[in-house]
Amino acid sequence: MVTRHIWQEYLDVVDNLSFIDTIKSIYKLRSQTIERRFADTKEQHGLKWTKHKGIQKVAMETTLIFACINLKKLANYLQDSLDILLIFLEFHYISKKKDKLIFEL
Image 1 (cartoon, rainbow, N blue to C red):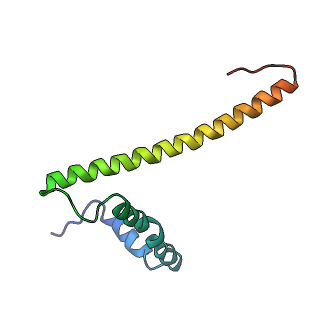
Image 2: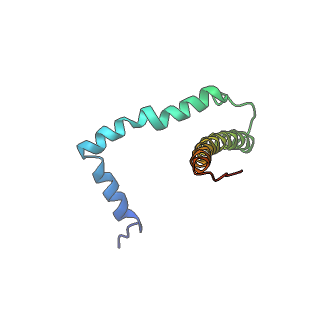
Image 3: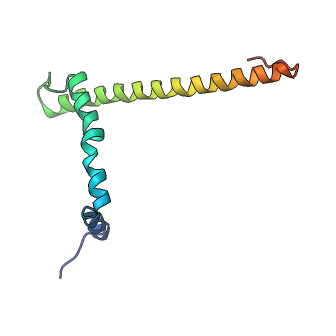
């Protein structure tokens, strides 16, 4: 008796997608987007060589590095969101001031 994995049907669908021309063209862009981020991380954050020996120590170091990278991304995202919010509030303040209503933060 031959049994298949419970997700094998979905894996077959993904395998079949790789033969479609539009998917092929999108996949070629992967090296410019996703793999580029890993290359930048490797260059900018010292992941070419490890400073520690042992898989647990290296895993701990890379986990800390990627946690810092994610915090930096979050801070940049929040800063951009805050800038948009401040622009909105400033516009709201100016428009209310024209109507003789004062909006204070």
